[in-house]
Image (cartoon, rainbow, N blue to C red; front, top):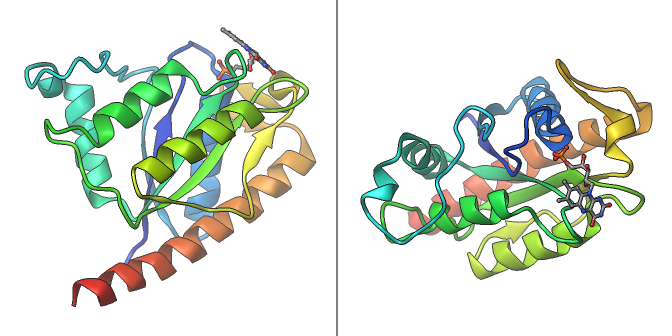
Length: 193
Ligand SMILES: Cc1cc2nc3c(=O)[nH]c(=O)nc-3n(C[C@H](O)[C@H](O)[C@H](O)COP(=O)(O)O)c2cc1C
């Protein structure tokens, strides 16, 4: 059974480095035997969550729902914006589990990536962990990708990592996401039987 991994882009900014990092991570997931699909907020920006079923009909929201329904695991990508996760990622998470067609992500695996300045996206990572915990998901604990000075390590057009150490970490991360996601898939199937 294939392992479906869904990336959620937490940046709307044109030329976003964290989006490029997510794209390269997706390629590494495919090299490691997983299937990868993602929501790019460059081309499909989500409207602000407003708790209205009419807004939930927006094509980007509907695509997020469809991707999330089938996912075995998620990769959340956030830049460090003011020591925090981006509003765009938080907004995506608010839609993902909403009562207007959102999905139950409990028992699903989440890998975290992103970047920022000297401390990478450490503030965003802490917040992503808290958000995933409140959605009853499992954050992959041992490998995360937090790119320091991401503007030097990642090119956005085309998406490319130019720092060898960061690329090596992305490769290990991708292999672990695919490996753990397949264990989680087995566990969910056993629990449902
Ligand atoms: C509004 C804003 C706030 C930022 N705040 C921080 C910060 O608190 N710490 C940090 O290291 N970098 C900060 N940065 C730098 C970004 O992390 C960096 O530009 C990164 O490339 C942003 O990701 P993006 O290219 O995906 O937008 C900030 C950038 C913006 C636009």
